[in-house]
Image (cartoon, rainbow, N blue to C red; front, side):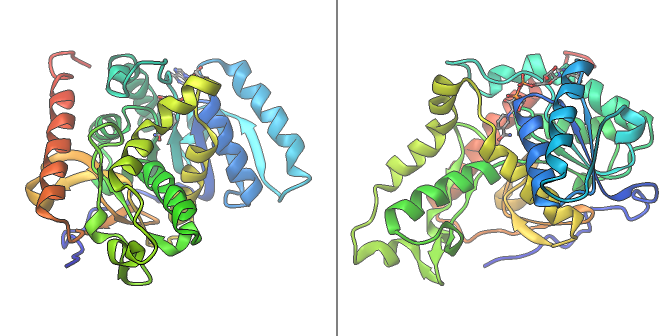
Length: 329
Ligand code: NAD
């Protein structure tokens, strides 16, 4: 059974000064630059402002992006400051360091929490009233830190969460089942990281449960598929040093949902409020995303095993989140 959270998760008075199709990208590294490029080529944003601690890097990316404008759509792109970013409808945070080979996303926490706090403080000091989309890892914890630091309503601060892992799973299933990925409804939920859970019991093709659907042609090894999804980032980082294209596509998709007030269901990371008995920690479940960010969370019909996995995932995140206490601000 599915249910939308009854409590409103957004304030309506926070968006008064925002420019409807402006997106700010904070951090012009691999993820930020690829996201800006995706936003530019799709025409989803009319204004893109790039910020980076290394101003010249942002400027270089902007020059490169500006030369693509005449081949795409009319989009204003510039290297700006926090006053520009504060008027954006969406601020994508991609500042910080990426994973080194052998490092988990949670290892990055100590290095990235200060960066994220600094960015969010600078944004809110300028009166930001849009939606924050966190991509910096560990994305669940840092989205929660950003929400608390910003004072914005919960709905307005989300993490890209398992949108990427879900995209990876659907791409792998599509290749196995020889069906287009968009026709396969399957979610990865929980942490964006090693404790994430594949919601197999809620997965389907055209309303037919996934296991039933693939019985006739031989089911793929589901455990192996989940292991491949979990290994995707390290496998790519071992080879090219970072990941960028798929996460940029996720950023684009989430921004489109906000800018177009689509109320699209995407597994972004948001605050759990009792779902499956989980409370007070950010993680991913399918969520309704529109102009004010997350408007509600959908509870999938999970098996007992999957529920247990999800609660264990929440505990991994909670321990990591609590390790921040005492580190001060
Ligand atoms: P990168 O090193 O290429 O870029 C990071 C950029 O942040 C750099 O240009 C740096 O100068 C800038 N920066 C650092 N501190 C800053 C500050 N205080 N203010 C503004 N800019 C600052 O790294 P990347 O490969 O682009 O990865 C960025 C983050 O995204 C990492 O944490 C990585 O793990 C994460 N990531 C997340 C996902 C996801 O699914 N959520 C996927 C891929 C990468």
